[in-house]
Each structure stands twice: as C-alpha cells, then as structure tokens.
Amino acid sequence: MSDLRSYFADYQDAMVQQLTKMVEYETFSTDKARVDAFMDYMASVFEANDANVIRHKREAVGDALEAIWNADAPGKPILILGHGDTVWPYGTLAERPVTITDDGLLYGPGALDMKGGLVVALFAIKGLMERGELPQGPIHYLLTSDEEIGSKNSKALIEELAIKSALVLVLEPPTRDGSLKGWRKGIATYTLTVKGRAAHSGNEPEMGINAIIEFAQQALAINELNDLKMGTSVCVNVVHGGTAGNVIPDLVTAYIDTRMMTLQAKERIDAALADLHPHIPGAEVEIEQTHYRPPMERNSAVIEKVKAIGKGIGMTVRDDGAGGGSDGNFTAALGIPTVDGLGPEGQGLHALHEHVVIGSLPRKAALVAAILRDWQD
Ligand SMILES: [Zn+2]
Image 1 (tube, rainbow, N blue to C red):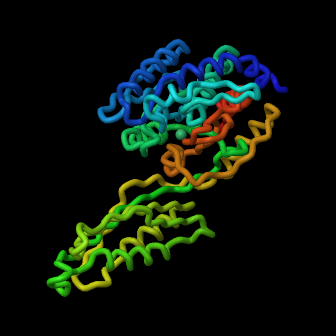
Image 2 (image 1 turned 60 degrees about the horizontal axis):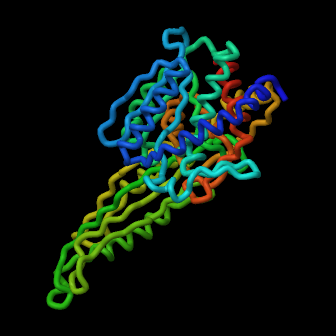
C-alpha cells in the first residue's frame, strides 16, 4: 500500500464519525432552516481546518458555503464541488438512523448522496495539510444546497467559480462498481401546451377543437425523436387535460423529459420541438424548456491524467458514465476539466437501502488528495 493510502487508512474511524455527524443533520433541499443549520456546522468544520469561509445567502433554499485555502496564492484554483442537500425529508432519520453493519457498510439518509463525498474531500485536504503537501495554488470547496432540485440557486455561482479554475472535482458517488463518472447525460425538460376550443360535446361538438386529440398526435411525433442507440431519450411522462366528461377539452399540458450524450443531440431535439405544428385547424402548440443541464461529454485527456495519478498511489481507476446529471455537467460544458464520481462507493442512491462502503472512504480520500497534490496543467 502506498504511503498516501496507508496514511488515510488510519483515518477511517474518524471519517466514519464525521460522516455520521453530517448524516444526523437532516437536509432536505427545500427545508431551508435545517439546511442552514447544517451549513452553520460545516462552516465551523471548515474554519477548524484553516479555511476562510464565505457564506452565500439564499432566499428560497439553504445558504451555500465557499471554503477557501491558499486564497492569495498564484495560479488557477482547483474547485471542489459538493452539495449538502438530500432527497430525504425531515423525519427520515428517525425511521432509518445511521447504522453500521458488521460487513463494513454505513446506512443512512444522504450518506452516499453525498455526505460521504463531502467527508472524502474534507479529509483529503486535512491530510495534505498535516503532511505539508497541500498544493501551493488556491483550493475552493463549494458546498451548495439545491443540487437535488436542479441547482437553480447555485448554477451561476458554480459557473463563476468554475470558469476561473484549472480543474473541478465533483464528489458525487461513483458508478455501482466504483468507476468514475467520466460522462453524464444532459437533461432537458420541457412543457408542451396544446390549446384548442371548449364546446359542449352533446349540443355543438362541431364548435370544439379537441386539445387531447391534437396532443395525442404531438405525443406520437415527439416519441419518434427517441434515438436510444445514440443515448438520446425523449419521454412524454406526465399529461394533464380535460375538465368534464361532456366538455371538449381546450387545454392539455404535458411534461417531457429528454436525455442526451452530446450538445449536438440537444440541438437536434430543440430543432425538432421548435418545428412542431398543429394538425387540427385552429389548434395551437407551444413548447417551453423548463430545465437544462448540458451533457458532460467524456474528456479522455482528463480521465487519463487521473488514471495516471491513481497509478502513482497504487490504485486502478476505472471510468464509466451515468444517465443522471450533476453540477459537473455545468462545469464540463464550460470546457473546464471536470472529474466526477470521486465520492465513496456504495449503493442505493435516492433509495431506502442507501449505504456507503466504509473501506472506500480512506481509499477515495487518498485518490482525491493525490489529484489535488499531483495535478499539473
Ligand atoms: Zn448528489
């Protein structure tokens, strides 16, 4: 075992304690008061580790924290990205308290997604400081509060910090088998609105324009945009329409979820949706994009560098990809080298069996520490 790996192995128990403490703060994305309490706690943790902490106030969600080491050092910063919010409402912890099993798993709401990753990055920095190996350049650790609900309140800050950084490390969990998330699909969602004209379906059906019948044809056309071989999915997943059994419906709204591997595929979807036209005379069709995280395309130069750094500490680093997005999608789309999936291993993202493999906490801390220490532009 390399020096760095055995160094962090000694920290395993401390990492478990730190993770337990973090999970015991319940931080559902929309629960501002509780997320703020967690941010108070994290600010004290960062400060105890010699960081300067900036608090970015937020109205609608919990505040974000930016912890900075070596603020005035020359060179481009490395940006560490993590989110403190979870998908679990207050009360989940009482149902599923933190549990550690004999086979080395730590169960708890938000342990894998992604408080385990927060612990990994924190200890990577702490360990490098103790060893006198913290890199000379600035390190920014941004802890956001709304990743699980689309990062609307954080996107601008993430982009502002990323654009001046040399490298972005995203502490989201790896794939099921522990691989980095070398690519992530982009996500775009849309609302389709179809307008017709209401009429009594008994007295004067000929006066009506049936928005449901118009919508049905649009839905079939939209479904044709799927190109699963190329990793593009276009799904009409929610539909609302109609008011009463004897009224020809004048309005349908539908929710469309699309995922794609490349910016080119996103352009193709947009062009096709913009080109939708009504089939029934008098009907209207409108499409509006409601959310977008661009695809994180695989950057092999970055991945090869991480693999080489891993090899340097005796670790085999693999990479794969993910259908779901993260805040790394924003930074990769700006052209900033982004490494995602650096958190601890485990299973059960957003599921009842969510758990972290305890033995992977020090392993991942060693890898993140090595990347911070050894990364060269
Ligand atoms: Zn996450």
